[in-house]
Length: 327
Image (cartoon, rainbow, N blue to C red; front, side, top):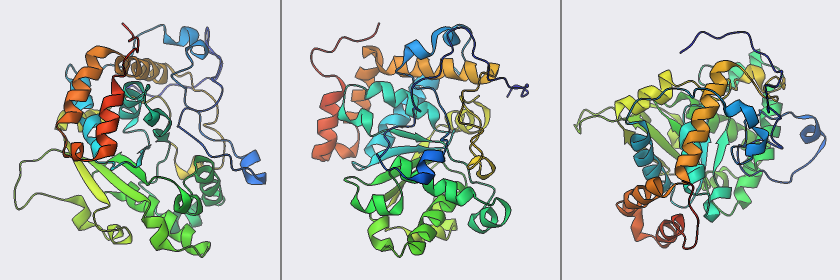
């Protein structure tokens, strides 16, 4: 990745901030903590007037087969969601969110997609409590704002499906542990909470073997979830490596040290983040084009989820009649 250069928050030509963040739907839950909390910012790709001249310039590079690999992964992630609300966790899967936001723009699922800035790989719950005072309180406020606090999950119409690239599963494990501790603190029935939790792990494709490494078999926290709540989507190593190790991202990582500071609540105009923004817009626009929606529908139709009514309904909505496609 490029060496990080000094940041500036001075807007470039046409660089007015979008009204709101683009992480997906939020619940209308207010209170003193909500009013003072500053959520992390990410450009909303639908509001082009807010991007203006920020789109002038090169976009972040990707390998030649990137879009085809991403399209296949997106189809499998939707199929494995089992009609839950897809929540893409952290920066690694942000390109999946951007592409699917375009692909599903003309469906009711557009409002169900969420990108959740979150990073907790290197610090567990006791570590956050000990080393970052006030961070957990801000995390609680943040997830209440997103509508995925334990209390709100119990009454949610659909399960929440956390989707992320997985190596050992530490980030997902830490998140589930925080939600479990939060439920205990509020004396909620964890059985009711975990009934609304699903995991889709994006893994590096391996040859089938009795000795194949399955990350969830080497972690303790999956026992907090219902059996069958964890599904995996294997992808080519080049896609996993690009998304997880090499891709320049639109934003900086939202680590526990930043949960309560508000330092990521304003746009970041660093040259590398703007290049990543242009790639994100390219993916979103590609999802609005027939040449990508048609193969996406073909990929969806190959999934076992086609047995389910909800999935067949979604497939028919991806290319609705009368829609004018972007060229």
